[in-house]
Image (tube, rainbow over all chains, first blue to last red; front, side, top):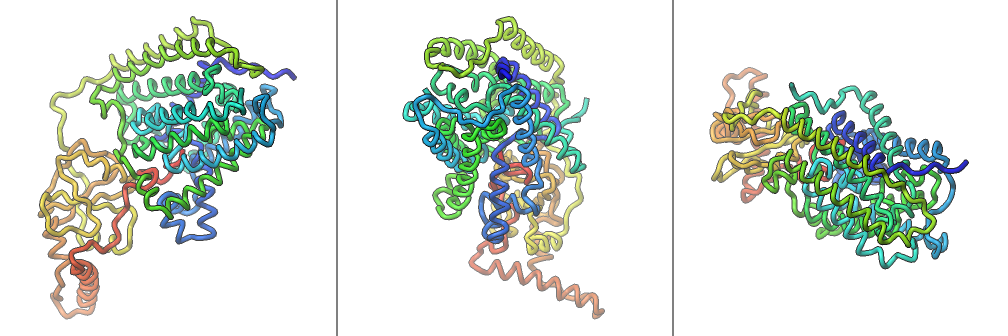
Length: 169
Length: 396
């Protein structure tokens, strides 16, 4: 089956914005993504070193109320997984492949992807959120730090793009 | 018109059902927008495909206009909304690092989930990397004090741009919409300049101009309606609101401090106090007190210590969220009932037991005090915790 075209970006943006607005009105907070890795790490740490976890500046408040996975944002990310899967499947886009430019090997691309993931995990810890929780949700709330974060994400991306161009173009 | 939003369902099953439904919408919209494809997202940083900017900013505009219009007409209580607390330096450094990781992976934490869900191996290994990085940060912030101070650096509490810039909210929102609209036009001109780089990656269709103007017009209409319907600010708006909850007894506070109750926060409004209740934050009555009070959640009891417990009202600028209660008798009550040893009023067994217990509590605090005036008891609820107010938040 020929894959459907991507949506018009402004239409996709309107739908995303309405989902975010509904989230604000229903939960009193925004959407997120890095809460899942944070809380899974907190769960792992809690089972191996409970005292260290409780006193850790970033993990401590996740384990205060018992199981760190009993959380709105964790379930929401499971919803994202389902939504992404159904979206790709119904558009004929579900495919086990690796997205990369023509000038890089698959291994090289996967190496960059892991390294980028490690940096983003660290960064989302430091910034208390990622592009979903800070830039998108905090941005729509006009939170001061979220706008600083968003501008710096673009700055970091543009500053690094030239060095990793072989991967993409 | 009253504050009906946010709804915040009490029933956990309903709450988690909304999480699945809204998360599904989030993932579906991201996938259909092209956000499951790392190569397409990377196009943002080589200027030939500005889909990231267009989708993200359209979403921000729609949610922002919708929310602040509802705030303007009085349907949303902004005080009950969780606004990402600002830690300026942590977010500047973290944002820059995340940008570096973004262009290396081609995905961000949210889109890596969508990418993996559409079968892409690069999305899956990005998720693995994010787990590793999350663990590394949690260990590193514990090991290196410099990283921990960066994590809390530049704390401004729940700060929003219009307040920082001293501008009224709705006109500010209108300006953001106008600037973003011009940026969309600019982004498409940039895309055309760099179109030679597109390669075989599918390009997202350009909307007809009518649609863009339709969108802008709709947002503008909503805003103007919001401005028109907004209740006029009352000139005689009270600067203080009465404390409704009953005063809390010093002994009760003492017991909760000893128990390390996380739902207790103590603030001391006396200007020049020599001694304070252990763990109390000094907060001036005329301050906005945001950095401290932003850390108080819905279930937090904020106990206010004044000189004699006569405080009846607090500034309306303080957040609505926590429960404020004055300490019975103020500092004098604390000094008399907790720091001073009690004497039995009769020889009955229960009275003697009460006095023995109370003197044990007194010894805890007066003993703690003699250590060169240091605050020895565990401080109640540190407000600078990651993510702040509600424990359910703090992720991304």
